[in-house]
Length: 116
Image (cartoon, rainbow, N blue to C red; front, side):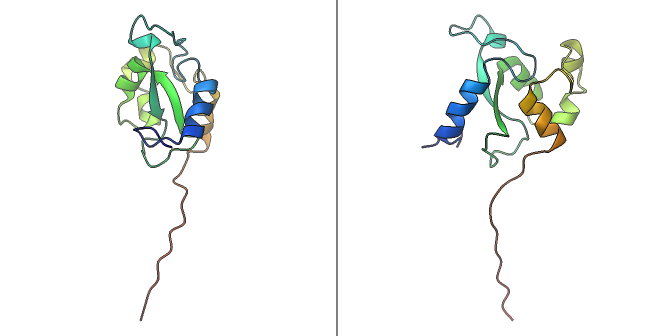
């Protein structure tokens, strides 16, 4: 069963195991968060809520998530926030590096019948 963001339970479980630190800034998540930097939040690397596979769902800190918002990943990586926090294409987690190289796409079969 999917959570309230539509993320399937199996994907959620795998992401929680994989992402123990923010996928962007690397901040470690704490069981009892001391600040927004220590609290994980669900992230769609490519901002499309329909893409809920393991290659697009990650955990990032609330600070990075708030900063990124609906920005394209490539644009956000050039932002003042990323520059200040030394977040670059080279410093992000492997799942983000893979999304930069090969952006996740919506996976569904769409058929259209044309009648004359």
